[in-house]
Length: 255
Length: 255
DNA sequence: CGCCGCATTGACGTTCGTCAAGTCTAGTGG
DNA sequence: CCACTAGACTTGACGAACGTCAATGCGGCG
Image 1 (cartoon, rainbow over the protein chains, first blue to last red):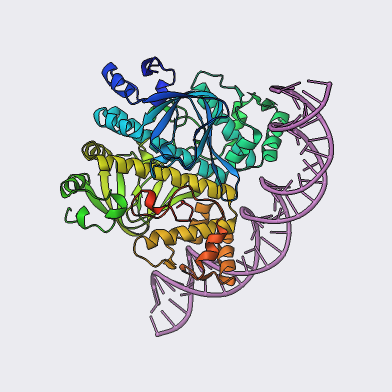
Image 2 (cartoon, rainbow over the protein chains, first blue to last red):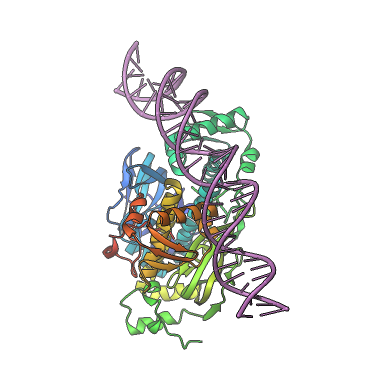
């Protein structure tokens, strides 16, 4: 199970602090209790389940969602390689949402007590985890601004920009992407109906901003998309490491 | 300046872990570099300011807000005794919002490096800070659900329930409260216009659910308010300590 | 090849924002 | 102590944005 090493993991620059010494890296690797594969459509964690570990995504793509009082599934976020799942469970030792794989995935299981123990020795990790959680707080603040202040088309423009930026930071094309989620899941996340999402895609295509063919999206005019997103970005967005260096991104921290 | 001790602070059960030994309490107290008073209307931290410390509120009431691209002030949250301000600044060493006192306040200044150092020694504190940040993540998720899934009146019902619950946990009446913020600030927070807030108050009053006289609100029918808030609560809400014991609250974690 | 889930498109209605007029209150200064 | 004023609040009329409902198209998978 530990044939996979952090040292050679492609997601490492997204989930661990930079500049760890080889000794520290060994220490950090001990945190990973095990690794799990999750098939497309399978659920990694269930809402209400007892929390013991956080998960770092090595490969794959997830959605997190929760059940609202009236029975609808509300999508909370989309997660990709190097991002963490389960941080919301720490507060009450209970996971607050489902995490469902939208493509076959591979995750590291990190028990919280080991994470804490190693954090006491490796101060860079301690700081990194605080930053990771702080980042999630700011990200969610960005979504709040988006939901409160943006029109349907603006939200969708932000969403597309954000997805491509994060994918680009992981080696994919900055202008072409394959959506892993349905229109309904996008709508749920942005608090819009699937019809509204569909209409926006069609309109963007008619304006020559995008080419859309079902899940395949080709962005023709990034600037046009960015002009639609009028809400200021609180913090930098797609960077492989936290820090002041990446502040110039104009995309809202949301997804 | 250290005439004020954590041991005798009334906000302590909200901002520190329970069951600290006297020795641990001494250690924890060393974190507090200084204390600051903030007059009503004054700003504790400014958006964009370099982050070095988090703040724990001893007394008083704050709003946090950020400037959107188009120049509006968007209220992000309201904070009261025992709650932390500034956790969002950790990720990029920069505060992402203003914190403005809505009544005269008194806060503890806790430099992050000291917080980290003490956390390495006092594992209960380490865990507590992770829980505090996890809580903020879940709280923000609750606001997202509220903004996405609730009507104006439902949002305002949730808001009122939440405020009274938090105030009740701090010794105030569970049914009577004095709002520290304007209709416009409530509206900004809930992504509604001040007219909509006003109309909802009037309607609730006409229904006999509330008595409202400007900032003075008297809740006559808590059950009616709770019935309006249809979105399920992800986690427990008003508790002085984290843990599974407080799960029964039916109010959405938002504010 | 046919079916089913996903996506598109149109018509209509509800909710809340916008604009505007007017009231009340706390705070200020005479 | 009272008059004045600026800001906060209330209330009404109207319109735009998006949700709702419904019909239809289409592509991938068995």
